View 1: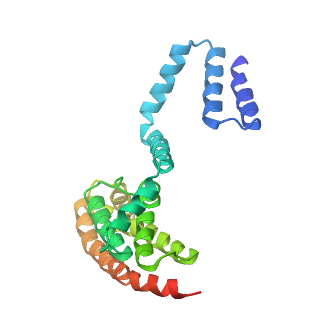
View 2 (view 1 turned 30 degrees about the vertical axis):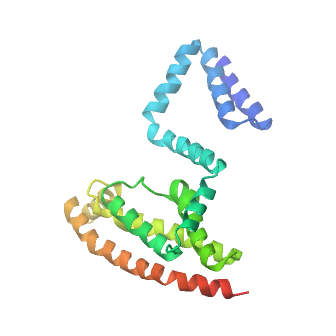
View 3 (view 1 turned 60 degrees about the horizontal axis):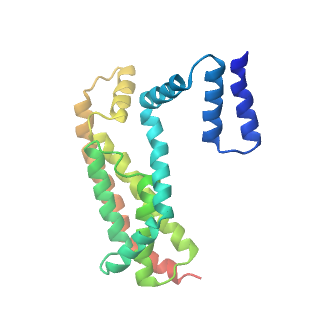
Length: 223
C-alpha cells in the first residue's frame, strides 16, 4: 500500500500547481522508494524508459530548445536577416521553403521542418519581415494571412513529398489498405506514382505563392 503514496504526491503537486515534470519525477521517486528500490535503481529506470521511448521524449527536448532560442531573440534575428536581403519577398521565401521541404521529405528527411521547430520560430517571422520591408507596419489580418500561408506551405511540402520516400509510414499504410481490398502493389510502385502528384502540388501551391506578394499588397491597402 505504501507504493500508492506516489498518487498522493501527484494529487498534492497538481493542486499546488507545481511544475508537472517535478511532480511526476517526485511521484515516481516516492513510489520507487516505497517499493524498496534505491535511488540509483530509480534513476536507472528513468534512463531506461527515456532511452526506449526517445522518439517521443526528444520532442520535449526540441520544444525546450526552441523556447530558449526564442527567448534569446531567434525571431528578432530572423526578422533582421530578411530586412537586410532587399530582393527577398514573402512569396519567394515561402516558395523556396516549399521546394526545400518537399525535396527533403522525398529523401526521408521529414524532421527537417515542421510547425514548432521551423515555421513558428523562423519561417513565419522571416516572411512577415519581408513584407514589412515593402509595406511598413502590417495590419493584424495580413500577419495572420502570412502565418497561415507559411503553415500551409510546410503542410503541402511534407504531405506530398514524404510519399516519394519508399520507407515511410504512409506508404506502408497505403499498401496495407490496398491489400485488405485485394489490390497488391509494391512500395516502390506507390513511391513512383507519388511523384506526379508531388509535382502537381508543387506547381499549384507554387503558383499561389508567386501571386502571394500581390495579395499581400492588396491586403495592406484594406482598412
